[in-house]
Length: 527
Image 1 (cartoon, rainbow, N blue to C red):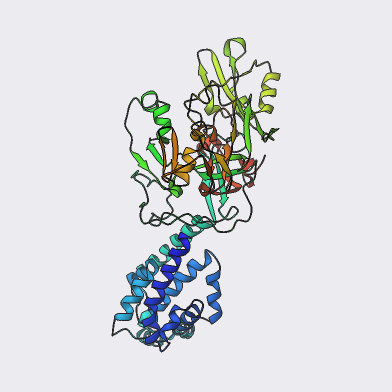
Image 2 (cartoon, helix red, strand yellow):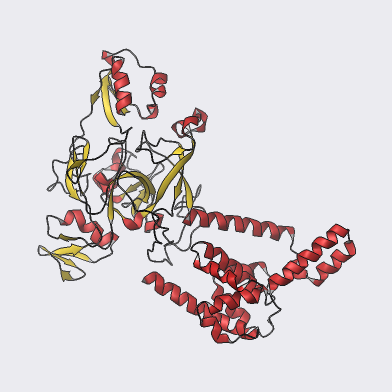
């Protein structure tokens, strides 16, 4: 509803500002306010066929159509300046208003018809090698002669504009930076991700540096302004998010983060994990709060959808009481004593697909992340590997409530309910830790606990009905993945897109190590 209201207000301002332009061109001003009629008249004013207005009905494409038409309209009134064109694209109502109130600005006819005629005559003069004719033509149509610098500037701006919109609405390239999805998706895999499959999410952050996500390279500052902003809205989806699919999404806990040199840490990790002392020697880092669409991007596999019940027993995920299908290359952490075996050649491990950069040691104990196939092959050559038991971590694990989940670990977790849009859950002090963030942060309600009672939007509440769907995301490397086990549900408005295929892959994320030729142009959805 908020998006619709915004568009209505924008259209009214656009129509009001065009009324004077219509009148100057001999068209009744009221037509600028009539949806459809205004678009048709607008097209005719600049020299387009009336049917050209139908392009406004196509999402994303209509943004390019709109940008071209606003520039062509002010050009039809003699405004050919570079910055005048920029203003028209950035905020057309202001540009139209300035032209409309200028008594000297008159309608000069459909600019595109004149431009087509100019290019025809220009081409004929070049073919005839008529130098004098070219000079006369350029003197007759000075508005169409552009300097080399302006032509380059317009070409670059259009390229950035087009790339930004393709990246924002259709397809974006991502690289796998960590081993949380090993061995399905490896460090150094470059993916193309479709933003249309799950429904194009319209931008919420309005002012942002083109082609940057949330941090400016080299500078290190945020690449956007939080205000003004638009509410969440998603266009119709081609398909739903299904179980067992890898999904790209905005990190739910990434709204309040410390920016360290190697990664972002959410405030819960920083406090509960004692990160500042243990990992960075107490060094302080910038603390930022981010809007939904500017949180860090994560990729995990969706294991449960809204309405499901999920439990993990000894590393096996169960959804609605049934054992979930495991990824072919799902990994766990294994250990062996180096004193009890001959030295293992790192080249041998690499040939088996083991990520050697993730090998860990503690004394004489060596730790490897392995899938079933790798485990069997290493055991076959005499390596005595034992699966590492995950410790109970109720402080670090969702919902970070030791009193309620004191025995939970990464391998033994739940059962837990995944919220579904329209579903109602009982709300009490026992269930609140599981749902408070969804209620307060993701669905933006006022939430308070006073004298043992829960209040939502100042009303005492014993139940809550969810406004959107939620998902449970986990990495295929089950012992080396920060996922829903640590920060909980992924809201629907955080979903970014569906991975399509791997278009490039470097070994270990470094081109100097070589290229994984066998991974190029392979599916990014392998199970």
